[in-house]
Image (cartoon, rainbow, N blue to C red; front, side):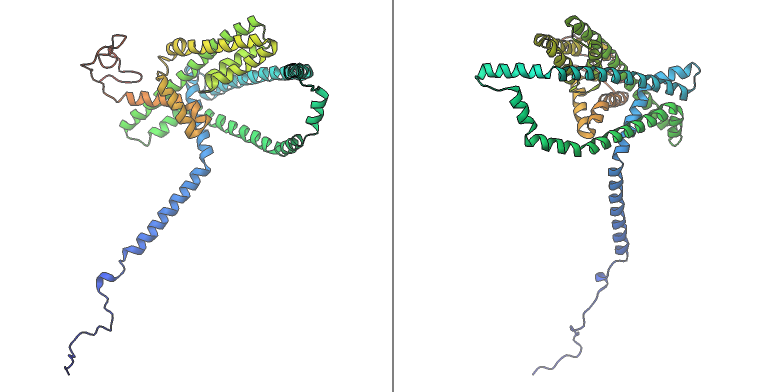
Length: 390
């Protein structure tokens, strides 16, 4: 039997080498990681809660940029900026109130006329159905079936429950409008002070870039607003002449509606603007509706290819494809608000980036249809909208 070696190591006692110990920095790292994660979650929650306010501030900022040229002109003549801003907002409020009042009276009168003539409209439709399909419907039977139907009772009960929701939505919209107006007023009235406060925390080189970007934003946003207002005026006059010749009622209100909605509602504004005069023209004569619809389509092509390029060439100068894409992107990000401010924001960004892009002469390419394709993409030394020639 072999003798045991007393000097052999005892494997029954667990060994704990230094490498198996917990590093001292690990608990602190875990705490810091959890704290950063909590801060990230808190920041995400706060951003989600403040999204509406941030969007309102963004809209107010672009509104202030749009009216700042007018405020600057009035302030240059010795008027205080606060008073000048108040006068501009007062003029806008009077114009909007007048438009809403005129449009409301038009719609109220037209709705009253349609309600008064509804029995005759219904009789004519029922007579046409009876003659065409050889049926024997009567207005009394249709009215009785509608009034005693289950879906009407369900609709009335659901509508009664939705009155509070509509009221809350109206009050919320009014509050957001007042918030936008208040921020826009302070942005426009304290524009120079705001720029000084922002530049005071930046080095001199960055200050020049910020001031340049601000000036470009003011020029592009104001140019977009004024060019749209001019096109709205031209569109309103053209449609007023047509409606007046056809004898469509409320020609003034309809012309103002077409001019404003077609220019300031992106993408679908033209179709939305043309629907109302077409519908009212149909109540006068169905052929008048065809004339109005045809004129809307033809005028839209004239505006897109002749009028808009000439008016916006020196104000916004955004390619139609880029403008359409920016509207789609803005609508996807911020809805209707994003679609509304997408074009001036894109024009500002394009002009600001173009100031730092160096352009070179293009060789080896044939000239374009205008004979300018062989030199720098333009041939006249112009670096493009908002650009700076290298």
